[in-house]
Image 1 (cartoon, rainbow, N blue to C red):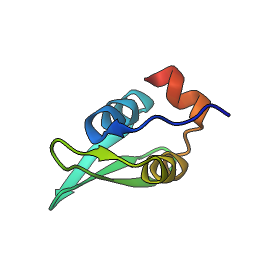
Image 2 (cartoon, rainbow, N blue to C red):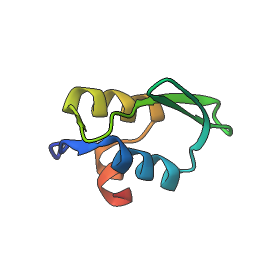
Image 3 (tube, rainbow, N blue to C red):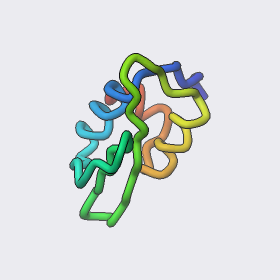
Image 4 (cartoon, one colour):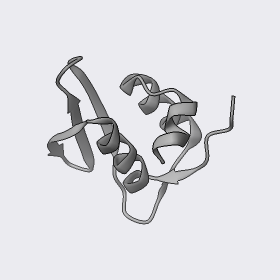
Amino acid sequence: MPKIPIITAEKLIKVLKKKGFVLDRVKGSHHIFTYSSQKLLVSVPVHKGQTLGRGITLGILKDAGITPEEFFKLQ
């Protein structure tokens, strides 16, 4: 399994949008995305100028049903 890079929230959001997720709402610094066909809900913490850790990124991808291999294809 390839190692997930440290990325910004903006890059992760681009991947989620390519997968078909839609921004539902913003609550504080968290952007909530939905995927209506499978009723998935994913929260992405957006802090300007900061990166997401590998654990947070992997957790979000797992919640979204995106494998690391698929992540690299969508990037």
